[in-house]
Amino acid sequence: RCLAGVDEIVIAKIDDAAPSEKVCLFGCGFSTGYGAAVKIGKVTPGSTCAVFGLGTIGLSIIMGCKLAGASRVIGIDLNKDKFEKAMAVGATECISPKDFTKPISKVLSEMTGDAVDYSFEAIGQHETMIDALKSCHMNYGTCVMVGAPPSAKMITYDPLLLFTGRTWKGCIFGGWKGRDDVPKLVTDFLAKKFDLDQLITHVLPFKNIQEGFELLNSGKSIRTVLTL
Image 1 (cartoon, one colour):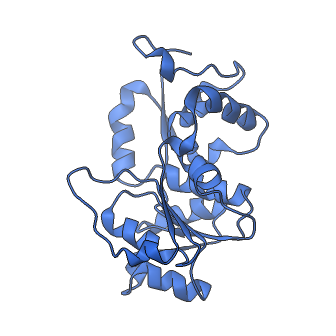
Image 2: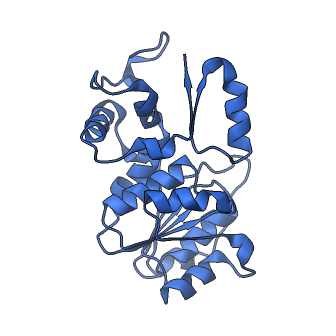
């Protein structure tokens, strides 16, 4: 499965039995979120996690946290319509910042009695990046930045947030090596280790691509797959 003009270094050979309309999610969405949890964050069994943003990547993070054995996974999003899907893929509870006047880091502290062990930012906003960092435990918490930050701005934060012991990590493509790891992820999918159907809300012919963007911008879709 190859497109003309694609550099050889970004091509990975996968099992011919894998359905293209599903494993296309390994091109970024699922692999990035799942890897953020299991490869970059290294979520441990029994831990508590918070996921900021419940799009394809955020939901994939939740799936990764669940598979890693997290006992509590809290989903956070302004759009409450996404909560049902988040719960279906493994979240134990969901909250919206609209329901609180205080920062979500404070809300999570009250919910957990301390702080979460792992936090993941899958939105790409400076404010939520800092709040996600504040949300993880000050001595041993790990925060993973997964959402692409705005390139025109610099981020500022209190260095004490890291000095006390938190770990702040970045995440590109889930930390996977495409040519080596994507075939393995596809094999895991074929072995039913995870279910990509939960992330695909719409399938449209390519000629309806504009409709796909409209569904995305309106918050009505998680992932729309275009078919030829």
